[in-house]
Length: 88
Image (cartoon, rainbow, N blue to C red; front, side):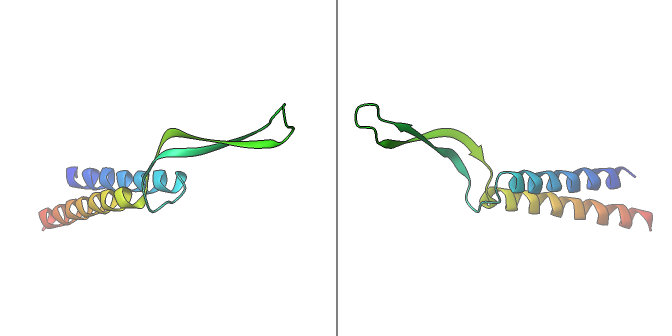
């Protein structure tokens, strides 16, 4: 019974990691900054200017998310196999 609970926890954790990756934009590479573009009108010349700023924001990428989710799934499968082998 304990192994099934542990397997469930590992599977939920893997699903959570995949969900966070999907919510962060399903990017391949992990990003630590986000580009923020603001537009303003220059009062002197009357032209529109774009101001580009980089703000720190973590976005999980597939390079860290996939190995973490795969490890969680592997540990979950091992827990399921242990629970089945103890029944016999």
